[in-house]
Amino acid sequence: MPRRPGPSARLKLTLSYAGFLAVAGALLLAVVWVFLLRYVPDNTKGLLGISPNRYLLVRTFAPAAAVAMAFLLVFGLVGGWVLAGRMLAPLHRITAAARTAGSGSLSHRVRMEGRRDEFRELADTFDAMLEQLESHVAEQRRFAANASHELRTPLAISRTLLDVAQRDPTRDRDALLARLQVVNTRAIDLIEALLLLSRSDRGTFARESVDLSLVSEEAAETVLPLAEQRGITLDVTGGPTRTPGSAELLLRMVTNLVQNAVVHNLPAGGAVTVRTGTEHAASVLRVENTGRPVPADVVPTLTEPFQRGAERVRTDEHAGVGLGLALVHSIVRAHGGTLDLAPRPSGGLLVTVRLPDAPDTVREGGSPAR
Image (tube, rainbow, N blue to C red; front, side, top):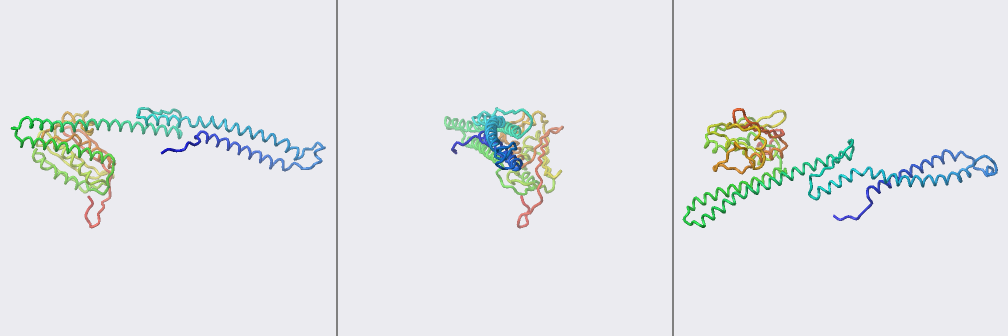
């Protein structure tokens, strides 16, 4: 909003310095007057004699005091202006860096030198903020580019199928419709995943006490048909494990982990184990699966959006949208937890989620909160 121009901080500080100096000088002169001149006799006889009196001292002292006060005022203004400029110089550097960042350049840093003080702490905090902001913007740009690329693929496939059907009226329409349904389902799943990822990143959700053991059982029931189809044993163990958070998001997190463990569990006939428990005042969820060995250098990239390791498999049966572990990571982070991925020596992956613990609360009516 537009604001009227006002005096600068440097001018205010200068006037403050000069004012305090003038007040200090006036107080000093008052002390001299009270404790010195009051004891000097005040008589007219002293005018003709040698002894000093109050009248003579006042006439001698007053002009000198006025000159001293004028000097103190000028000295306070000049010295205050210089000192205020030196004191505010770091603030000008921070302001310049903020203007540069406001113009779109986030790579600029203040990098203030010297010992730690209030301005140095402010500059370091501003540099840290710019670094995080630059990293976040770069991540968002990369994510937007990847999302556009991923969305372009199903749309291009749909257009190609429609073009082929238009040029070849004799083509099997049932097969075309089935293929279009698969492609459109993938596009819808991708958009829903993007919206869920955005929601979890913002942290805009209501929190309640959620039992991870019940959530794990529900997620296992959802993925069980896929596991049975692939001949994979799915085992869920553990007692009540509560954490504060969103039941919907936590269910999506566990479902993605179990589904990911089943899909990438090759060859067929492996096992997936889901364990819940409490360790060191934290709610812990572990999802472990057998399968092919996962290279250690690939593990850190698995939580990146649309990043798939070389050993990860995409099939027409379950292509996914490339956001499974990215969603898990975002949901865990939004709930104040940590996500750890470790390759198993015999093959497969061990995923450990640690979330804040919550007391065992019960809703009204006696049913456990979920």
